[in-house]
Length: 610
Image (cartoon, rainbow, N blue to C red; front, side, top):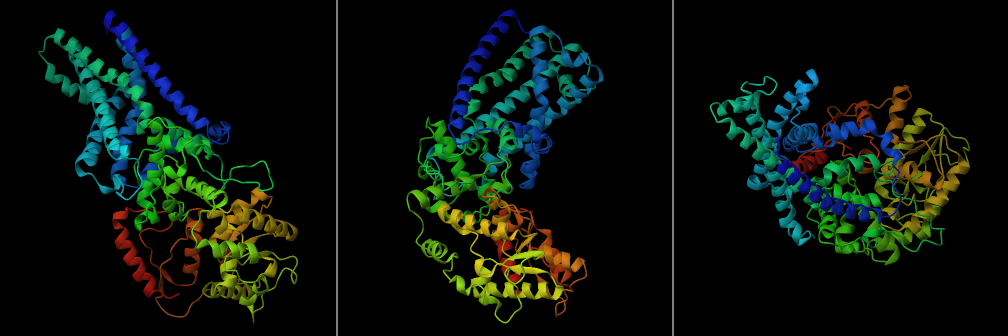
């Protein structure tokens, strides 16, 4: 289709574009490789099925914001289908050979797919542009109090405008150019119904004019791709490349909350945590390029939604705009997120769980805490008592270990010394052992175990804090000491199964202790209760008719460890009615309903029998 002069010009333009694109991509790879750790490429082969769901079907996108997600799907699926279409158009432009017309039924079916996809992409991008530039929902930005790179506040909008313009020009011109081609053929193409409908408008138009129009449409369509490529490494839409890499190559973890192991006995370690971006893992640096700046993580962040300064989205965006401004990984992390925001994080994992491209801003924050706590001793004063308690008496409440079993006074609760080979080792935890309110939970669970005749034991005065709260606060030294001690004791006891009432204890023993040589089967107490009910060993009939309760899923039970059904089954077996709040289990709802949900939740909790 192209003339010789056009072919030469196109090749020159393409080579120039690829040259500048290569330099942009090479710079990105240099920054990613400057991070800690090595990429394990073998993981990609293990995750092929997962990649098909997440990348091919956009599964993570559809968990939230259904309307925009559908529009994103129209654009994304259209983009994937257009990879072959653009190749076919290039072959035709340089050789006059129409690939799809010579591949039989496959080519015909693909032509129909392209016809539909073209319309879907144009509709989707126009609708998304209306949403961003006219409707302008507040969820696509952040508060003025949030630490956000000044260039990002306008840059995100500008970037979206550039990309939307590129996509619209590319697809509308391809659509128009193909309609000129159908008009030149003199008959409608039944496999391209919408294009053929438009082609009917050109009946009677001079063929030479149609040829010129076809050339112009090609240059605007494929030329838009050539012109866009050098900008692509600097655009947030490079996520189409890095999101699949994120899903394929993220290091394997037992839970989204599992942190990297630090050997405190290794005297060669000079830096604990992330003082600068280069102290982050390579995957954490890559997160900044995978980020689409959709602010979904911010929208589900409990810290942000209670007015605090933390925005997990702003952290990733600041990393990216720092790079776009020519910065390196030598930048201090506290220039990208304030210390106040760092300590506002609850490590609930909501940002990691909801991110449609697999980013993990929570991990950055916890690594920053490691540096602040261990290298700079810069942590909130409120944590001093807890740290001292864990160091001196092995629990955050600073209660003497001699009092560890006081909660069980007057009850029959066997210790490991009294029952050396239990079927169940009950890890009581610091709160149930030392906090007056939580002790009621321990006492109630002990009654259930005794009523069911369970062969169990507790560690008693040998049980120490798991160290979870120290680790989430960045004090790896305290955690390391407690974890090492606990694993040594547990390995000596060699429990068949461990049951916990505390989600944090469950998470730590199950997911963090294997790095210390402690591999155990750990279950939540509601799971054990369900086993006992199912085996007919206990009956959970509570007094009172029509008792109604609402269950608030603990983050480290539901989100971090995927245990959501067991607590509800336990409540059902007790004969109570469970009234669910809108945000329950693994469900995420739009936070514009958040205030209403919180009010309803408070009312439900107030009226519920405990």
